[in-house]
Image (cartoon, rainbow, N blue to C red; front, side, top):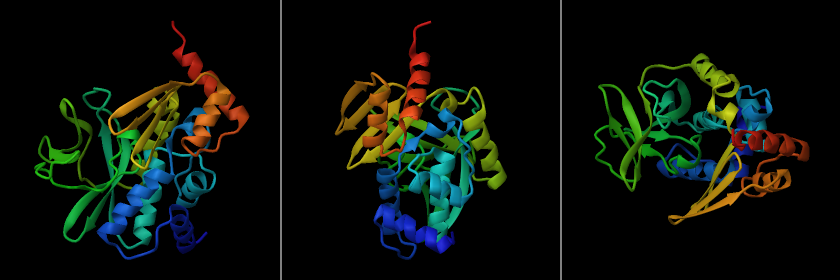
Length: 269
C-alpha cells in the first residue's frame, strides 16, 4: 500500500478531511484517533506477532480492529502526521506509575514542532492519555489538566492533575531515538515475562468524554467525575465488552483464552 493510499484510508475511517499541518487539524486527529481506536493488550496476551512497520500497524489497528499500545498506536500516528507534513520527532519515556526509581524505556510518543512551538502528542497511554496535544512548557506555566515540567536538568515529566495535586505519568529527555530503540522497548513490552502487557489484559477508549477502561476482569466507565465499575463474569461477557465498548475484534475462542488467563490471575493464592 502506498503511503498516500494508507493516509486516505486512515482519514476516511476517523472522518477527518485532509489538510495542511495546522493546530486545529492536529487537535482533531488526536481526539478522533482516541475515540476510534482502542488502546489494548490483546496482542501480547494472545502471543500475536506484532511487527512495527506502518502497513502492519495500519492493518492491525485500523483494518482488523485489534487495538494496540504505545509503540503501535503512536507509531501509526507518527507516520500519519509525517504524511500530512508535520515536523515530528519520536520520543521514548519511562513510565513512573509503578513507583520504580528507574523504569525501562517502555513508552513512545511524538513531539510536533508547529508555529514555533512544540507539542507532545500521545495516543497510546490508555485511560490517562491526554485528549489533546500538550504544549511543551517545561516551566509548567500553562497549567491545565496536563502539563510538562522539568525535573532534573534536561529531564521532563508529563503530569496529570488529580485531587491530590499533579502526578507524573512518565519522564523523558530529548536525545535522539531511532527505530531500533523503539523495537527494543516494544520487544520488552510484549514479550518479557515481567512486562505489564504480558501480565494484564487492558483496554481503554475515550468516546464523547466518556473514559472506558478495562483491566483484566474489571471494567470502569467514567463520565463527568462519576465512575461505574462492572465485573466481567464470563468469556461471553468479556467478548461483548471488548466488541461493543471498545470496538475490538475478538472471536469466541480468543475470548475464552483471554478470560481464562485473566480469571487465573485474579484467583486468591
